[in-house]
Image (cartoon, rainbow, N blue to C red; front, side):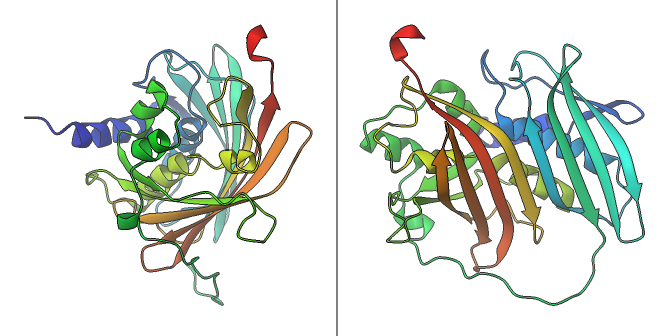
Length: 291
């Protein structure tokens, strides 16, 4: 009998291991989920995959910065054009344009760095309950009276996700915060450091901008709320082990003008900071009767 979680992980790997169709041109397959808007984390991860495939051996992504321009269509493949802006001894830079129907839907710039020693310090992992003490994502939403959209269930099928309780005041800091634990639900065949970063880039779009909604009297899945990612940045501090538990700690220092800003820190189970994330998103209150 086929393990559905293993099948979901294999589908995720196929989704992110995109196809080279010509020099510096790549094609990402259509998402398995039904018709709708492409998940932002998918486009960011596939764009990073395209950039990484153009990279000589020995350099790994240390940062990416992306702007979402148009909503992508889940029923169509995405074409990625890679521009080789710079190849130096220590660093290299790639720009990637994601396109559907001849129009750009995302612009991404990624920087790569060869392994190098240097000064070391890092923030401490916050003191939060471990994944064993947190409910699975579906149960947590159900307990709050919310149902999870089918497209999101498909998106999360390859992962175990365990959210903790959000804090509207950030435990007295004035910055709303929340956290979740996540890992791949089953082992992935590839242990390639580039693929580990690509999977992390995909997961880094989980729930981040929702942190900006936490202190306000509207649920994230409410028809009165229009939410969309506007930009996304990731800094990779180490190769993440996405098959083991990772803690995603998020806070939101600001929201206004129909936008919300959120930051995230991702730690491994040992407490090492492996990535830092920042995102601004549209958080617009709408009249549900008109939509």
